[in-house]
Length: 394
Image (tube, rainbow, N blue to C red; front, side, top):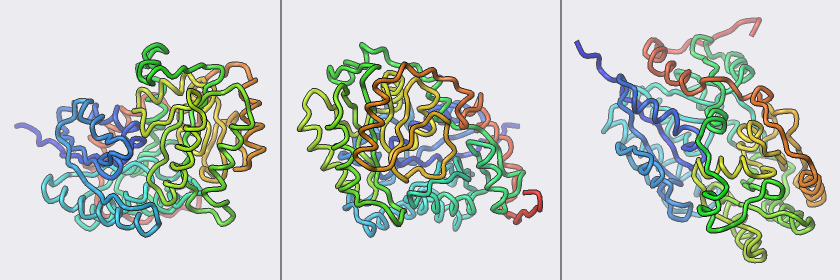
């Protein structure tokens, strides 16, 4: 008797979550008991942000359910329209595909629409990267809300798992997998410097001076500077320092992201040949650039999670990632022009960094396989009815 395949819908809405999930997606796609559907929405379908659904197609995935969102502005109210669109899209995906589970990574605002639609339809949610903290963005509250809707939790660290159990999640539903992004950083075949030079249209990448920069809006901090002031402090700090060049990727389409993008376009225009600004590099190119850069600079989670497993230093700016577990040698600075400039100058003078995976709190061998095993083996055994777990020892 042939065993019925599990239909798993993996939802991805940005270059970042696809880069993290792509290796696991391939493993699920090739698994004999899984039928994988990719739900691609939001930024993936936007030409402004590189139309990165093309990267998913180029990777060999053909069963893709497109989840288009309106090309609206970057105000808070416009983000709500995207949440609503993703809820509607998810309902349509569920009606068409009838998935046995939906995979959600992390904390993006549009994933609230996905999780809500799945919860209402009674479709189990597999949640990755729950139990983490990022105090400087609304992501933290969204992440916790999705965790309460999820059936199975796949966490990046033991501390994250402990937080979920403290929140009342049953221990049998929580599996520590390590970060898929760290596994990608360690195992993805990297482009050579010459190949990367071609991909970057001849832009010279130098491990002694190149900075890999991504800066996103800070969406949840009472004492934050204005977004314009934050990005002006970053670009101003770079202008105060000599001896660098920079690969800069676009911010996500969060509230106020256009303010950042406009400033970066101006900065790139003022520094021809010194700045390479791009909507998206793709996972392989991004990780290759990370391995060949002196430092990752900005406030992206990849500087906290993936970069410590590469030779790149991390300069983490401002409060966006505040509260996250961090490797001990990450350099944290305020979103202050002088502090940023000093950190960049110091990093450029530092010797090459030795990347030791075990020093990264998000590292665990075999993360993708652990994720696949949990989805295929453990998930079908879990009841959709969750009990609140309480223990004085938790």
